Image (cartoon, rainbow, N blue to C red; front, side, top):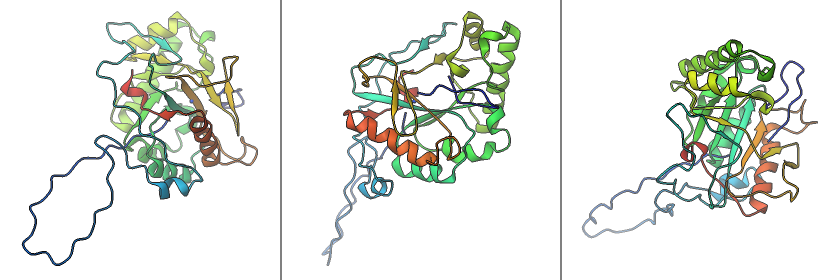
Length: 277
C-alpha cells in the first residue's frame, strides 16, 4: 500500500538508520605528558553514536542500539523465489521503518535522519519524485538507509496485465539503479495490492522480496492490523513522505517523531530491513 498519488487513497504502515562506529587503536603514550584531555565516550563496537543532544533537538530520547545483524538472514530469497512479507521472523525486539512514495521533500527530514542515525528504507515512486530525484540522494547515502521500488506511476497492480506490471516494476528498477547507483532488491506494490503476475514480474525485474507491512503511521497515532494494537518483534512499519497539507498542519519531521515515540514506548528499537532480507 502506498500513499495517495494523483488523487489515489493511501493506506499507511512503516523503519530507522544505524551508523557503525569503528574502534581506533590506542597510540603509544608520549613521554612526560603535561596534560591529558579525556576523549569523549565512544559507542560499543558496532553500536551507533546515539547522542542525547541530537535526539533532544527533535524532542526524543536516544534509541537503544539494535542487536548485531543475523549471520543468516531469516527471510530466504534467491533461486527465482520472491517471498511476500509483512514482518521478519525474529525474536529480537526490533521493528523496521519504511517510507513510501516521495511526494513530500522536506529538507528538515534529511537533517533529522542524519541526526538520529536510525535505519529506514525508502520505497520510491517515479511519479512522485521525477521532478526532484536529487532530494533523496543525501538520504540514500546515510548509513543504514535503503532505496527500494514502488513502481513508476503507483497503479493498483491487480488491475494491470502481466506485461504492464512488468513495465511498472522494471522501469522503476532501472531509474532508481541509474540514479542512486544500486538496483533495488525490495519492492512494495501500491496499496499492498498484488497477484501472482506481480510476483513473476518482480522476479523478472531482479526484485528479491515483496515487502508489505503490519503497522502504518498516521499523523499522531499508529494504525495496527492486529486486534491487540501492539507492535511485535520483526514488524514492518509503513509511513509516507507527507507534509502539512496531508497531515493537517503536522510536518514530516513531526509525524516521524510521533512514530518513533510510539515505537520506544512499547520497548522496541529500529533495525535495518536489508540486514534481515
